[in-house]
Length: 199
Figure 1 (tube, rainbow, N blue to C red):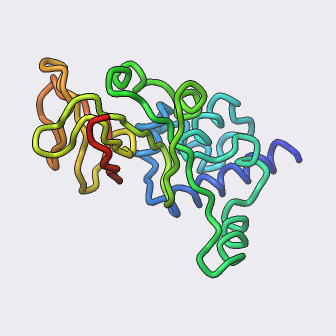
Figure 2 (cartoon, rainbow, N blue to C red):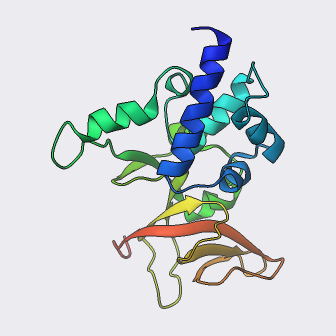
C-alpha cells in the first residue's frame, strides 16, 4: 500500500471513529496529547507522511490496532462484524486496572502502556480511552474501598459524574460539576461502577 493510500485510509478511519465513538476532534487532541493543527492537517489531507508516534497515539486513544488503522476500513469491518450475529459481535475493550495510589502518576501514560503494566478488566460497549480505578479509600457517601470505577479518561464537555482528585487533601471525589479550583484534577467521566466493597 502506498503512503498516500495509507494516509487516506487513516483519514477516513479517524473521521469514522470520531463519529461512531461519540468523540470530537477536540477530545481526541486533549486526550492523546496531539495538537489541533496535527489532527486538522491529517483530516484536511495536508499531510502525506504521518509520523508513527502520531498514529500510535491516535490508535491508542480509540483502542484499535496500530497496524490496522492505516490499512483496514473500520466502518466496513464493524458493519460486517455487527451483522454477523443478531446481537452484534463486538469484542470487549480491555481496560487497565490502576490502584488508587498509582493513579496520579499513571495519568500521563498512554492506555497501551498501562495495559502492559497493569491487570486488565473488560468493558462491553463502545468506548475508548478507558481506565479502571480500583479504590483503596472510601469516597464519602458514594463508593467503598474495593469498588472499581470504569472511567473515560480526560476532560469531557458532556454530562455525567466526574472522578476528580484534590491535590491538597490527596483524595478522590465524584462531582457532576466541572471543577473550578486549581487544586482539583479531573481524572475523567465515570461510565460504569462495579461494587465489590472492602476486600
